[in-house]
Amino acid sequence: MSCNKWTRTALILLLALAMMAASGATGFAAGWYLKGASSPTRASVPHDVQERFDIFWQVWGILEDEYDREGPLDTQKMIYGAIDGMVRSLGDPATAFSEPSETKVLEQDLQGTFFGIGASVDLIAGRLVIVEPLKDSPAAKAGLRPGDVILEVDGRPMEGIDLTEAVALIRGPEGTQVRLLIGREGEAQPFEVVLVRARVELPTISYRMLGDGIAYVRLFEFNGQASLRMKEALRALLAESPRALILDLRGNPGGYLHIAVEVASQFIPRGLIVTEKDHTGKVTEHKATGDGLALDLPLVVLVDGGSASAAEIVAGAVQDTGRGVLIGRPTFGKGSVQTTHTFRDGSSLRVTIARWRTPNGRQLDREGLTPDIVVPYDPDQPADADPVLERALEYLRTAGPTRQARM
Image (spheres, rainbow, N blue to C red):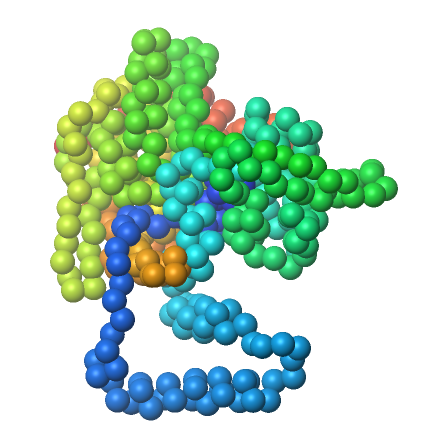
């Protein structure tokens, strides 16, 4: 499995996981702020809107009186569906309504830890498929494999289920059991596996020394642990006296805005990291914190179409300030900031409240960043090949960095 594929599913849909959201789709919202939400009074709603909304209640009444069904209507599901349809009508994928179970999953993902079975999953052809168990996780210890299909969770069929809802069913309190009915290619009959839920930590970061004195660090998402983990990684790598550094943000869907600023500050000594502009025209500047650990090392940042939101904030700041070179493929293009309203029943509404711009004023929403060195995708490349990383190593070993920081 390619690293990009693993990141797309594992970071957003990891069972012990998660990801907002799918990493290649919309990315996590840059700026996840929880706040209470109050209901408007009827008097505050324009009269023409009130009149038009009467149609909603007419439809509701018709369904209650005439719809052919067994048992009562699921009114909660109808209400959530109406809200979801209203939000989707705005045409902004970053503005979204989440039911309680989905909200819980998203909140856990951004914290970076939760209790589950430790496997990334995806919906493939309508089936809930295990993409990869995490090392030493309950899923791995139970012998679950990539490609296994989860047919049932505690007796509930998974056919046609929403992915986030499935994740919520498989997660649960530490030490509790969950029964999975598994379908496996080559097995004549499905078989049952009983797993004990355990604490799972998302793979926020990985790092190592490559050849020729080049340090490498990959950040998978900007969750609540990312800034601390980045500092730990840099301290360990700097102890090896590297001559250059590669920061890999490929497939990174984003996360917290303030974490993006803290991470970027590890490489950029001073000045603007990103600015926000809301619908009223108010501009908020976010500047480097001034406590970076890797301010002088030659820097290359790897990006691709899965690099979104907070990942683009960091990459854009590096590119605009001249601190380093971007290598890879154009980024996703999510340049908006969301605030999150939570409601009494645990549901939530994420609303786009502002757009962010790079230090040079670039608005990247729907456009993305173009790398300084573009490495086209080759569909015929071997599965284990990584031409983007190879191009970065070639750049650092031969031409070397030529751009200087402009502060």
